[in-house]
Amino acid sequence: MTEPRPIDLAQWPRREHFEHYRQRTQCSYEITVDVDVTAFVEAVRGSDATTYASQIWAIATVVNRHPEFRMQLLDDGSPAVWDVVHPMFTVFHPETETFSALVVSYDDDFRRFHAAARRTIDEYRDDVRMFPQDDRPRNVFDVSTFPRTSFTGFALHVRDGYDHLLPIITLGRYRTVGERTVVPLALQVNHAAADGFHASRLVTELEALFAEPTWLR
Image (cartoon, rainbow, N blue to C red; front, side, top):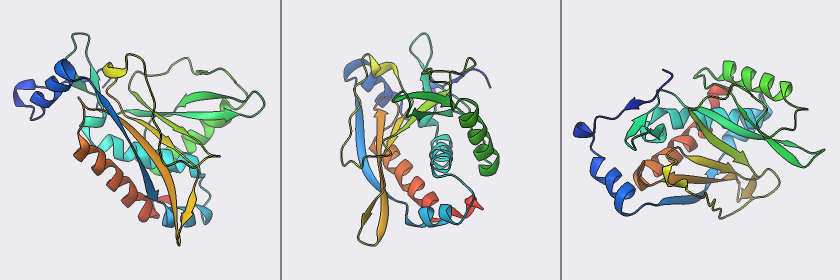
């Protein structure tokens, strides 16, 4: 579907919450968590998959499971839901110390997505424009990474961002905690779209995907 589906407000359990956080208390929130990726790291080392493309697929898979993370406002300010959202992720250019934001269509088949991501990264490897793709869709959510830095807190301040309902996710550098490997993950959520329960579920389901990485095969 090329357009988001309007939500039936009369039947929507979160109507009151949505209206409260749109009309009275506009706000977003960020959480930063350590996600256990011990099994995932070991599985990637034993496969031909790349870490970043695999991380992006896992994130996009969990995001697409839940309508609260596929929401967008219509022109009249009412809420709607995309059938699918695609990850837009950053790729660094060391020669210019800048990045490009690339979109790859989400595919629930990991191997097909991974191949498409590799092709896209290779195609635009030397194109240092911030948005080199001319056909970017509207139904995208943002993923970025701090591959050289691990962090315990992260906040993104978006001017006029209260109309942005899709999640924004930032990854950091792996670090070792005891015998486990963790990756810091920052999740920014518009409170009109999702509550703490929904954010916690996303993190829990993502960690479960990383804990059972049989999909890498």
